Image (cartoon, rainbow, N blue to C red; front, top):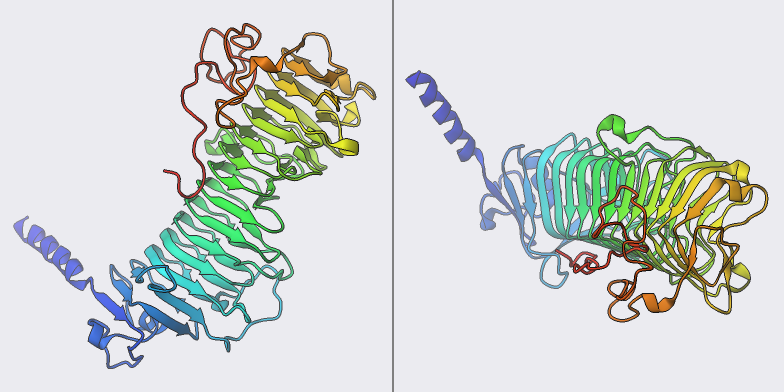
Length: 500
């Protein structure tokens, strides 16, 4: 036994001894007779260092300054790769050589060797404190590529000016992508759009506290598909074109999108009925909550087992609808609740072609804009044949005095398929029995938006404890009507990359 223990102890000591720190410096030299173990023996490029160092619990340190990369740096399992910081003036900058060979187009097979840093079939990697960039007059395809990775951390990186994707992360699990700045990293459409962050089939991962910004280009802020137990949270996404977030046409299992600022559409459609997420232990396919969203075309559906809750939708653009279904036969369920919506432009929930069933809308506070000739009903559905079992309860709907709105169309059988009761309405037309006309004085109208500005005030028996239980937590003997419970003391959470 003692011989076995001494052998194990020796093995552990060997593992510790094998961990080394290697150096890359702007005054280094890429030659094989250097070992990189001291700054005096540093190599000149990360790509060369990757070719010299074996996998294991090693650290590669890059000094301050600007490095020109001529080929992909391919990381190995167990490594920590760290620079001197992501400030271009004082940190570590790796810029792609203008002579890097590029394909003119690709479809689904994106060339791994057109990314500056690549990880393939690796695990346990930490990458941080670098600027990764291609020249503004010749964008490389991408910054960071990962395929079949596990336990990968990407943090404190500034990734900018690429033509298809700042980060492309595929078929990987336990990713932790946080506190990065990704800017103008999807400037060109290559057969199909990329994204500043592009993922496919990732699991058990978090993407959080990042700034994802684009003033040019055709790509999405984030584009993915096929998530399982993935959380996208506390990010600031502000893009000039396309969508802030898209995950379309794949089954989703437990994708949580929360506490983000999104300036354009969040697109999560599945034309037909996707798999039941409960089969993988999740109560929802996609759950969007506690986000600030400013696009009038806010959420693109349909998606079954979708939950849209506790968001502040402050519409700053015209022409869209908050939740839309474009085609397909979707049997739901969809839950839309406890959202505050300002300046609703055309419709709150809108149904196009196909079939939309089991949409539950409750405890929202909705203020409409004067949309002129764009004005539509709060619930826009052309024909009862296209919908079934829409339930609308405990909501506040307010239209401007100069432009009243219909709650929903009363012709073509629509009124037989939408059951609306227990709502408070102001300046609404064609309101069915079982709802009440309200007063703006019932809401606070002061303080920060959305809370406490849209909270109910006392004395008020018309909103407080006046709703019906829809299976969500409430404060009091019954739910209040509207998005906020009376007596709530916690303000609307801070969102974006600077939030805790």
